[in-house]
Image (cartoon, rainbow, N blue to C red; front, top):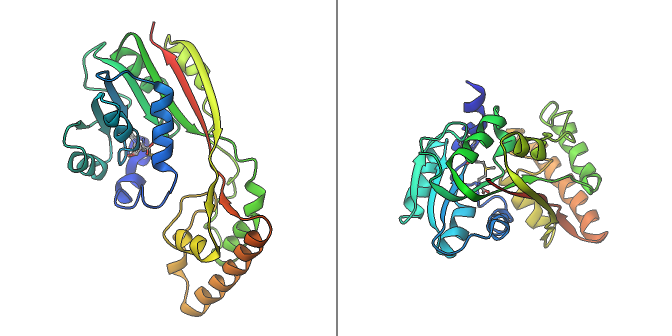
Length: 263
Ligand SMILES: C[S@@+](CC[C@H](N)C(=O)[O-])C[C@H]1O[C@@H](n2cnc3c(N)ncnc32)[C@H](O)[C@@H]1O
């Protein structure tokens, strides 16, 4: 598998549950579109569109939307769900579009996945008209990560090797440098936090068992023998109950939005 295939393979396999397993996905799409702030009628390209969190917000605003993704299952779903949108199967590092044909390009949680980010940002610049807007989102820091340490420890005990040792390391994307190198101007960024409250331990278990892609990502529950699974579940619910009683359970979501202009 090439590095580029690795960037989208997981999304291809999980297209059917991608939006369902993260309660914040649609809100993040709305936030990115609001930050890009296109006028109605703008020609907008959404890169790595996934299930269409940004696309949906752009359609609602009256943009003329084109969406691309490299995962065939995402492309198929986008075509079915957004009949007014032009959807193409395309690599974000090499667009099959002419120069200067879009007013706005958005990329929600995509840049960090790509092996050649310089190429991707240069391509965005190429397809934007002068004065066009590039807006992107990336995962932010996780200052409250230690609140979830109990779950990381539990997962490591029951699933040796399944939780990466470098869990706290985030992909470091120097967006300002990438934008500058590609010739963008007027860079701004906005950080925001979106805690997603989880009503009780049982609801957290439901999310966990549905392969929630948090820092303590799961999908492991079904790999245990039944008696171990019962024990894991018991201790999971006890840990969640302590969190619930000690201030409430919330998925801590941090996002950084970036925006710049093509000169
Ligand atoms: C984290 S998801 C974000 C989806 C959507 N933008 C959102 O905000 O919900 C990343 C998306 O980028 C796509 N992707 C990954 N590598 C890509 C590439 N090289 N070219 C185009 N799309 C890619 C994945 O298939 C996936 O749909």
